[in-house]
Length: 183
Ligand code: XMP
Ligand code: MG
Image 1 (spheres, rainbow, N blue to C red):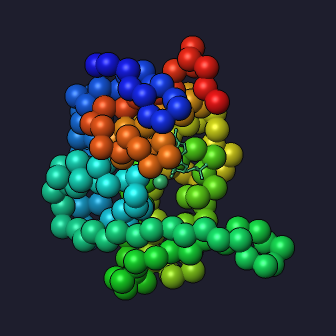
Image 2: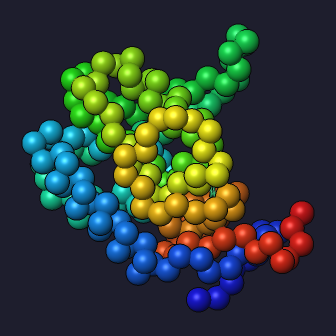
Image 3: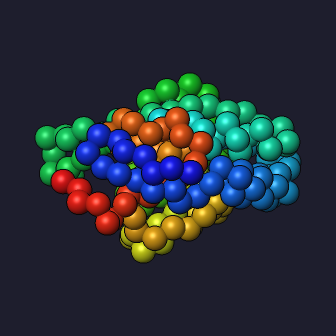
């Protein structure tokens, strides 16, 4: 695997596609065992999760439904600061088991906001499946039920994750090369 340059930054190989897929498969098997009779609704958080969701759901063999959402953040005029809105949720989710599918959980702020929005909709239970987790950056107490891999607090790209819009299509994950001066 070669290093890659995206705009002003250089990234070095970090997690190979083979390792990614092996870990995704293990996660799917756990979900299959845990939620066999729940008819879960997988809520895929775009954009970053598209590749992980596709691989995961090919290995999920229990009856389920899949829906794609986007989170839009805007700064409200109130003192509460950033407000997050969920776009694209068309399915009725009251009383359902919802599995949030995330590419990465960093501080957990995004996830917490989403879970708050879902809780208001009176779901039966919320499970969270994130391919990556940065435990050193995570500031929340909410349990991440399914984690593919834990990584240090470094910036990664590929497998759906982007740097300024680029790199999402790479099948392996790359990490920012700290030895190269970055602006
Ligand atoms: P929080 O801090 O809210 O962040 O958990 C979650 C969102 O931040 C983005 N993010 C990253 N994107 N490489 C990326 O390409 C990273 O290392 C990274 N860390 C956080 C991502 O959009 C995620 O949903
Ligand atoms: Mg994301």
